[in-house]
Length: 299
Figure 1 (spheres, one colour):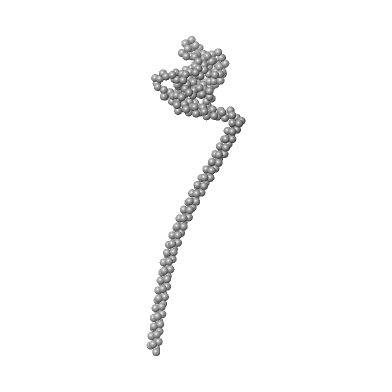
Figure 2: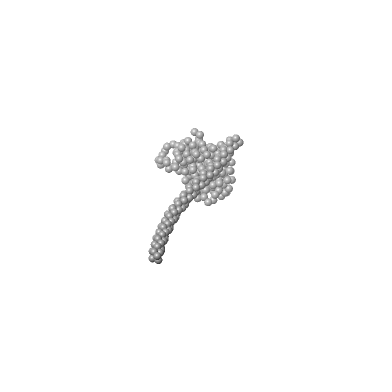
């Protein structure tokens, strides 16, 4: 009986060991499966997190670009609004000038037209023949001197060295520029080494064809220039030539007020005495050919 019970007990123990081993094996398998599952899930979650991060960054970048475009659009709208407002003000001013100050508007239009004429001369210097009478009737500004000189220089450079062709009303086309310099920029032209000799040769003709207001402006312009003491040329020689032109020109020889105006404008007694002395020394010399002959600018 003991042996049988021992045998039954051994059988039960073996059975229990088998169950325990099977249970342990099953638990181990479950733990391994759970571990692999958690690993896979972790990898998936990490990938999802990376994907989500990329997506968020991409959307943030797009949103930033959209915001920049919106800001740029708003800025353009603001600028456009400002331009519209400015144009509106300009239109109001223009309407106001048309209604209440047409002379000021015409002066602005005339000034812009003068600028365009000068630009035209720079492009086509030979067109002075067609434009000169318009510029004679305009008031040129100080800034126009450089533009006019640029056109004159191009005209001189383009002329054949042995050319004898007639120009507008002078020996050649470039003389038209000299007449404009004489009328509008006499003092400044005298200071210019490129123009001084030609201006001096043109004094008699220039005075003979000038109107009273032009004569006054030319005298004042030259007087202001010759009153300077730091000039690089002989002031006495230039003043002598101009005094002689005033005394012989058909427009000024019988009008001593022009000579008096020049003397007051110079305001340099020694310079005036020297110039008068030079004229006194040369008064018996024959006049240059063409002196005193008026040139008709309207021909």
